[in-house]
Length: 157
Image (cartoon, rainbow, N blue to C red; front, top):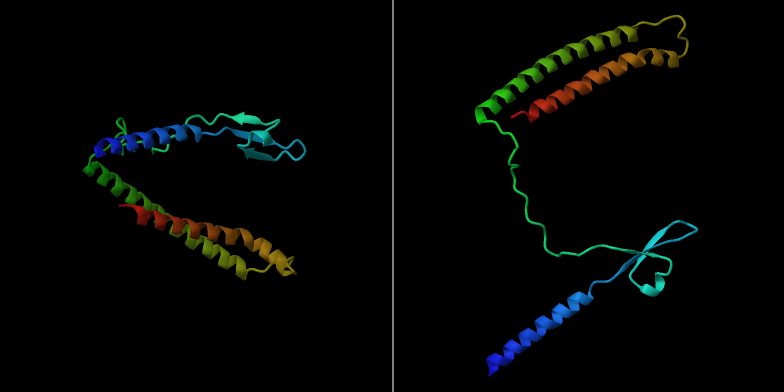
């Protein structure tokens, strides 16, 4: 007998939860102020005069199923091919780094030459800085390139 009343209690609880879950859905209204254009949202029907109802669709509290890690049609290569590609990439980056270092040395040399040169029409320091600016930018560019290449080399496997 006790078993039967326990089952009835469970059934009653399940029915109540089901009924109240259906009531939990509320209409949401979007209201736009005519003067300022600001938007506000409400679920109170009496405050929703002149507002438009939003159709939010069904709500699911369960998370979506996890995605598979590998796409079926995604191309993949074997380990040896990938190692060869990484080695080629490293070699190319090393060559670019050496070239960029040479360009930096040349840019620094030109900047030093320009800093030691003083022309007669440069009576104020502002004209000197204007003349030196392109050389300073070139040095900065090559320094940044070298830093980025070193960072990229560090990322190679």
